[in-house]
Length: 171
Ligand SMILES: Cc1cc2nc3c(=O)[nH]c(=O)nc-3n(C[C@H](O)[C@H](O)[C@H](O)COP(=O)(O)O)c2cc1C
Image (tube, rainbow, N blue to C red):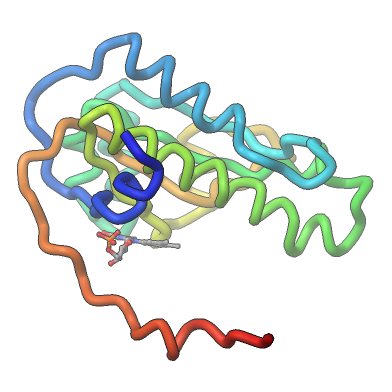
């Protein structure tokens, strides 16, 4: 698949077929997050791949009862690692580590799409509750919850702003 096709065709998928994800696809998703760029190549991020039903349900409740999360066969929790980014001071803590997680998460969404899987970035959740539910060490902060599964709907693309509204070209 062309990168461009993945960028344009990917949609947020919130309904999933009752079908497991093959191990080979899970391995590809792991490679997708692993090879994302990161500040100073510090890779200040960690991903929890959650298959356990009770944990998925807890995550869905903590995500303001977005219960579709619990119906996905896999729920990925993307975390920032504040210990690994410590050498980069304030900018590392307030900017780089968030960007490190975000670009790896986008890689995951695009790779999922290439594999025929649906996913959605969920940002609305109780972060300290999620940290508790996953028993995270102090240095990790959950930044995104990403349910992944074979899609059971085909949403239309939500509109995007006009190019002129989002890009300023300086020549
Ligand atoms: C930072 C961030 C937070 C988001 N949080 C949620 C969320 O809590 N629940 C949800 O259903 N979708 C969430 N989304 C998905 C957006 O609603 C979705 O990407 C947007 O509507 C555009 O649709 P598309 O992904 O199909 O292009 C989030 C996306 C981002 C990038």
